[in-house]
Figure 1 (tube, helix red, strand yellow):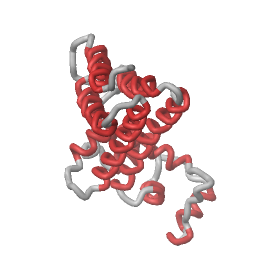
Figure 2 (figure 1 turned 180 degrees about the vertical axis):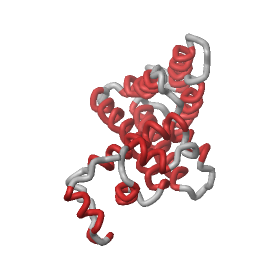
Figure 3 (figure 1 turned 180 degrees about the horizontal axis):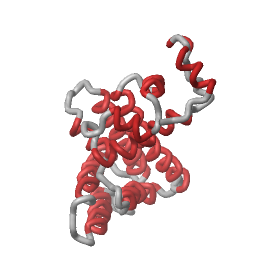
Length: 214
């Protein structure tokens, strides 16, 4: 359990409407809860991990937990936003590096998945995993997964358009289908050349539909 300071004890006694968390002062307790949820949700799944376990492993009180996250669904949403945000940051940096090399950016989108899959803790795509567990169409997890996928498709389509592809968005969707399938297979396939085959197929799909160089 976390050590409670005098200031924190007073905060517990204040009326709910006065206990606000300033966005300019990030909470260490909130970060700890989110990082704990990140590890547990990704390793074990959303349904298998309850609030009580997160509270215990994060070392916070139940009051502290609910001050930052009104429900488990809200925490799940924050978990996916954080993981999705990390990829968006990496891609934003890559877009700067490959600003004049759209083919290089497309290769990056494939290679970054290959590198992620080399981790001993790799469990596939968190958005696909979450959508498989939260199957209700109107669940926020479904919307987050759709938005993340659409963003990736748009990034790939922009790069394909820069290469002169006549239907960049259509090919980008095909590439994302391949990438999604690979995100599952790379964690299960026992063959040593699986990553090589994925990248080979990725590049072949791009080459097959690009207009000839004149």
